[in-house]
Image 1 (tube, rainbow, N blue to C red):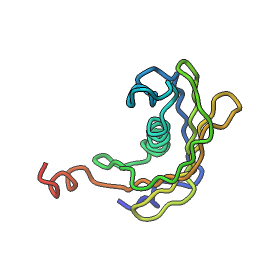
Image 2 (cartoon, rainbow, N blue to C red):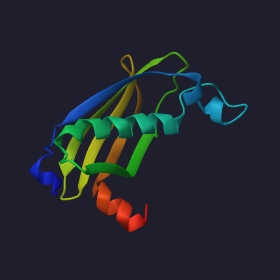
Image 3 (tube, one colour):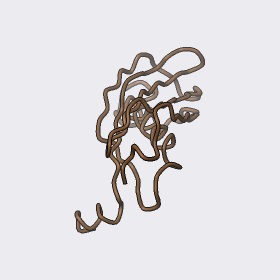
Length: 130
């Protein structure tokens, strides 16, 4: 599959998350504040990116995260509603590049770029011996 055949610049998706205690840095690292953890924000950005293009993929094909370049700009507490947005900004044969952002209301929590690689699940699993 060539991503350029079905994925176009501008495809987008957004996700909404109410921050639970188990997505905070304090949940993972004792003594740290109970605020939305950077890796959890990045996870939401990656998931929004996958959502943006999922319906354009052929059966048996998925994307996997390959690059992240993210800035975490502001903290959010447990119970905050976080909206994560991802937009396709470039499409190569096997790589899709995204611009990602996260907000709590109008306040920007994070921003950056993310890339996903296109893989055939059956071939991928065979190569790994799964």
